[in-house]
Length: 238
Image (cartoon, rainbow, N blue to C red; front, side, top):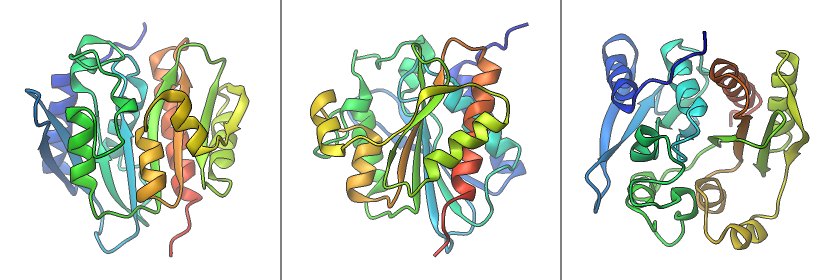
């Protein structure tokens, strides 16, 4: 039987329940100009190097959001780091199963100039003054043959993540680990994605993971979880 996607409210409830069973700090960040909030989760020793992971910016790409939740519920993140997590950066799109937000906005084109959507502004403001050893954004691709990624300043971390996915027996797309020019990519998509923004301002290494939406949801969740663990394990602690 195919795995069913939980509702956003169920996703939210499970994150908030982690306060009682894990060292997880959860807060809600207001989306000014929209009737919703974003969850922001923090865990680990704040004195350690910081990794940020985001998921769900496209509401019809649920695997990343569910993988991120599973990694925290299973206590599977690398303990050498502290984490700043954005469990679902497009709640209205996730609830509706749509790429765009309730306002019809592709949020992942709006991270320039302080944020061009309520969600982007909330994240940009909340992340101000933070620096990250690694930034990951978890996506899906309905045309991909297998798992692949975009990497910026990753020092081979993307290749290691793909190798781990491949070793798990899951398919990887022939395009593998792409390393586009950030300036040309911003021009081609007509704005800044979260990954591009973080690479410019806050993160030494940034990767966007893409799972193939044609596969079963449970398989895609496992791919993202494997790739996240591999990327973190390959990140240098300084």
